[in-house]
Image 1 (cartoon, rainbow, N blue to C red):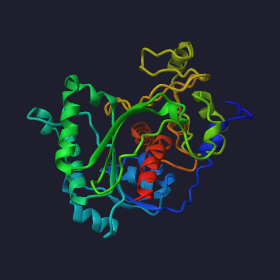
Image 2: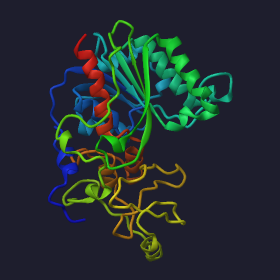
Image 3: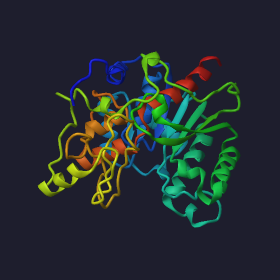
Image 4: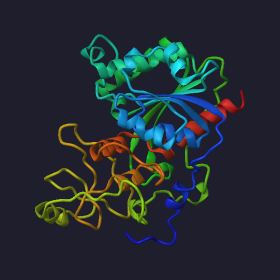
Length: 346
């Protein structure tokens, strides 16, 4: 798409510095492609350790944030001691961040979910919090977690976190579109503070802060993410058959293709949630608003608020999955900045 003269989104996105003076340290579990880590980096937190079973994901983080140490084995094997050793840290840990895979919504209780390895990862995360005793933590997950089993499971999860950690807990649901991201994407966030940290004044962010925040409109149209794409990485356009192109051409902006279940962007609105698709069927990116093709990895990363210097590794399917699973870095930045404001006054 042509470059508009006043694209405040791209100007802001690419103004966040790659080199930064960190004030705090951070440990990252279930890191994926690094959305939370990049947000932490922008907020002045240095991820000393990132972990994911898939090596290409942590390679992405290491290429872009070279200071990280990497762990690629089973998270269930981690202990507090092993984490400290891998991260080369003996002092207090300021923050632990994670978005464990939570397709197993029922995490607690005597139901089958505890046997589900994905449910166990959430349990493992909070066990590690209780052992590591960081000053704070962030847990991110899908909003459906609040509603499963009429909300009982979420209440049980909060009770479980309280019992295991004793931390002061804050919870909320946030939409990335309210924080300068050109995408409607709701996620829940649970933030906790160690009992000795005076955190009663902690507030979740309400609006964008920092660089050019006063220029950000109420909602950013998706078309702003699709401008000025010359000479950027991860911009390989997928080759579709003529039949698929003809089908995509008939899908109206804001409509859905019945064959692929891909949605076509309305360029004047934020996009719908960037999805990863199924592991069997591969990625499910949106359809470009003006061209009969799906979005590239870079275009999708722009909708997620990754700056252009952040380059994704692995094959294309792995790249789409890293982007689709990520917490938008600009949203992560706002939440982790709010935590930084609490730690600053201790």
